[in-house]
Figure 1: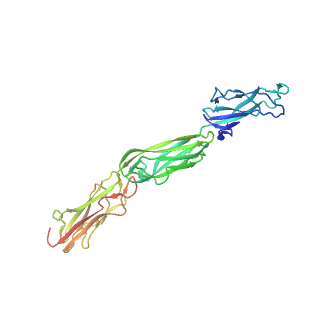
Figure 2: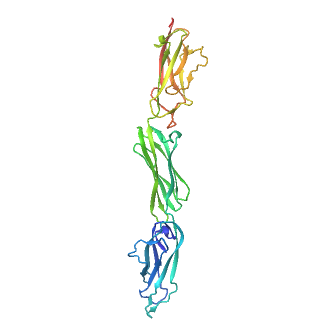
Figure 3: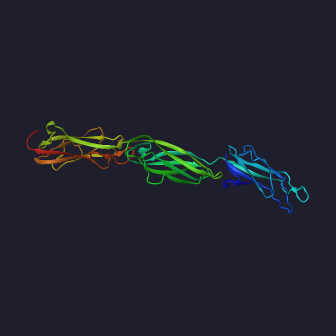
Length: 360
């Protein structure tokens, strides 16, 4: 029988595994035996002795003594193969000094060799947010690393451990238990925070570990990804009166048509999505949209690099200084990497205006 390791005592071993095979001859009679008996081990193809210098295939034995051999399984899996043990020299009955009666002179153990435990089909990805699945991240953003793999059915105590570059952090444990292998895919996920500094081609790896049920030895894997961290999107707003030229200082005549132009700059590297986002202009009382431009509106779409223009009318009477405000409205534009709201440098611009009697 196989006596060690315990995982192989069911006569199933893993490829290239070392195990201890044991045999014993028992004396069920009353007369004693001498020590002249020998037993011989016959191994199937592919099985070898680990210590051929000491573990001779033929060994002398004494009744009740366990004889052991350290054997290495073949390198390829196979169905049950017989390991044969036979008494090849019969010990003598010391009372009559003749060969003892042998009730059973041989035994066979069928040993199955299966592939050593492993974890395969490893996959490491950034699964969310959608903007980060291309492995391009914004500074300081959160993202989810998802790992999938299939531990073999003869494995147990499988784990997955994420290894992060300096500056990347996770709130929980780096190691996640995957449990015993059953031939089905296992999943582990970590929420990771990117550093606040720009990085290039940083390696995030996931290593696996487990134990072979048969050999009780450990094994490891698996895979890695490389991520870039770029400066997150940061929007800066500028705005002012752009026409007529004589109104650039904010002094307006009664009922004067004038134009305010706003510009948006993304000072970060990450792209932005402005779907649904708007710039808005807030007018003081008695100031209005230009009545000669019926399609004019207080809120307008925007994109960095494209001017946003409002056609307006000054008050129909003289008024003291007032403030026209241009600002980003909700909902915010989103950072294409984090899919979260962009950052803002300058998010609101006040423009001072005064309406005076006279002509500009």
